[in-house]
Image (cartoon, rainbow, N blue to C red; front, side):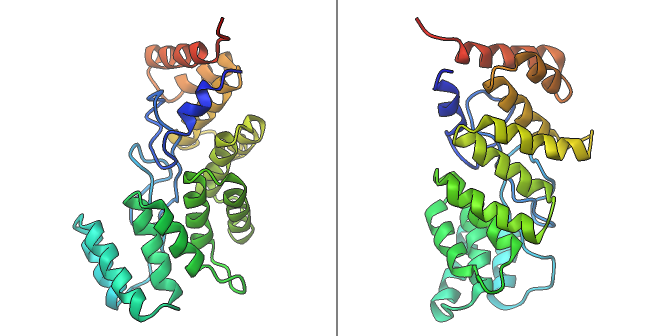
Length: 239
């Protein structure tokens, strides 16, 4: 297979699929419970994937700023608080999610690593860490983080989706397909982005008829056909 599709996949780990847009990466999603909404938003998937419990102090302030759209200031407030409380894992985790939303992936990794407690692991933190690793192209540690998160929160669809996309980003289409079908198999009305991602993975694997059938389920027929035709052209051997 041509390597071109994987260049397409690797454009930006947190970019939306835009099905397929045919120019951006699949959507990595944290499945935020209250902050950003559903499993598969049609915009960059991010998330303060924090429990919805009441917050106070700098975290409450940061969430208020984030809600107003001032994410940079929210992150600055959290980092100021972290400088005074370097061992506070909750501050680090909150900073990690907002850093991801801002596209500051390396600071997000550092924050999530500081937030992670091996003795008392938290699936939200592990999912954020996996997403950040995947965005940097570090797929093996991303997959380890997602897998550990799934041990703590079994069958969590957003985490399974991100794990599948990590497999796709490293070129393991068979595992990506299998993982996405795990989600689809549990719910025939699987969220749109899961179906879009599965269609993309199928097309990149040369399963164009299956990909088109999947795409038609979430797109107008003409658009689905044109998107699959485009992906077919990318995988066509060059002279």
